[in-house]
Image (cartoon, rainbow, N blue to C red; front, top):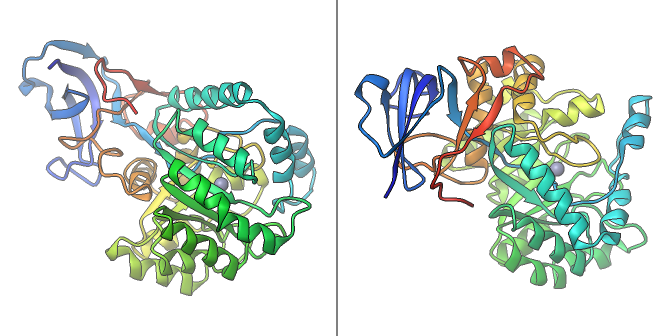
Length: 393
Ligand SMILES: [Zn+2]
């Protein structure tokens, strides 16, 4: 049993209610890691003796970021589509077919190299927990390949066979596949299932189809997540509430009834509203109204949605900066949404905070305060703090 003392923490964000403020903030702080878990946090002056010691010289330390929505297993490049959209073309979800073709054609080594490069890129920016979806295979064999590869990087693996109806396939036949044989083959390889519920897109799924996908997934033992309300008003958020999903993601177009349904469900473990402002940045779309959700009492998470079509960024610090600058969240709300809120979106209580017993997943900033994450957008301040003897994932 090795204990490790981290000292010289200029500012420590813990979310421990025994420490001050909504962030459980300590200054001139230290923490102790034992067996990969947080064993103690407090003022430097009262830190216990330990076997090993790291001094961070006045830096801010936070819980590692939790990115609860990514699509990291794919091949192919869509920078030309991005450029076309930047010249005025509108996003409809149709470009997903380009990635599906490239991903099906790629061998495992290529997909693995892409995935591990992106996961390392996220980690280098302070992300310590990643959710990763399939959804660029859309046939049984390729969806299974993508889920197995994702599991090399994380336990938060999501089956997204219902990403879009693949080109040249009958809708009803595909729905039968994704709720039948494909689900049976993929459910043992995933923790979650997700659906692109978006009647505004000709390739995504409407309310009845999405409900069928989610009900079948729940029967197969998977937790539920929903892509909803991204391109227009729709049933995604209400369906997430109705079926007890952990999260509804995007939430760009919400009616008053949607917000009320999310707020009513919030005290009973209802869906977290996961906002993906990198998508709005990259597609020049209106940002979600985060204030309306927060003011109604809905838990908000931030995620990158890292994917080759609509947001090719792994940077949680960028999402925090966007949340503050473009979605009028406070800095504290944005930091919480990128850590504790995001952990709740994955129904995890061991990450996203630094209370006693949490995983020692630490993010250290080349800055004295968490405020710099929003104050210095685009500057690479955040990195993962490696402590020997972590519990690993
Ligand atoms: Zn997505």
